[in-house]
Image (cartoon, rainbow, N blue to C red; front, top):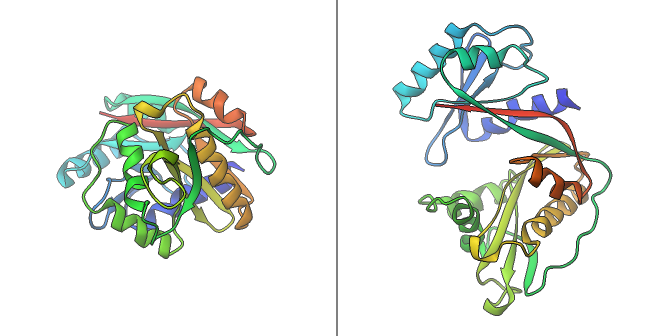
Length: 252
């Protein structure tokens, strides 16, 4: 399972980024507008990573004007953490969870309609904006257009919970949203967020359940995600996700 996830992690950024190789590390550099990528272990590398390699990547990230960030799985690249920390970055741990079975049902949230959002949906812009609001960021310029393009190309699937009082069945205001990105029969659920005023209503869990059901219906055999912390991991456990490893994120 972890090897399949590693292959996925090396593949999925390449649809919108170029890969620059630094020996045991790969730096993904976004092509065009959008959220910047990160560095991670080179595909197939299992040994130690010199501190010098990390510092070369960080120097390149500074040159490009992008965040000095690394993402990897602790169990598949055990030699990277020491080098990253020795370079001065802070490492954060997150439960990496995979779905066992088809996914468990959750109650339909009151006052909201949860549905998949296609490229021509009138609620697309609101659905794309909701996770930005959830995490305290302004929406990126052109984010809705880029997401529509990725949906059309089959690179992204989007689900959202819309406020019934604002026309949730046809469009309206998204209270929560999230995506998954399919690569073959593997899909990762990402960016699930609920706007602050609508939290504690089960919307994020319902959106995740919709994404899981859609991914399974489209042939996904392995569905996984990273939880922000143990409390969130317990919520995802209600859908059938189980912790299988530790996702690590390092940043300055």
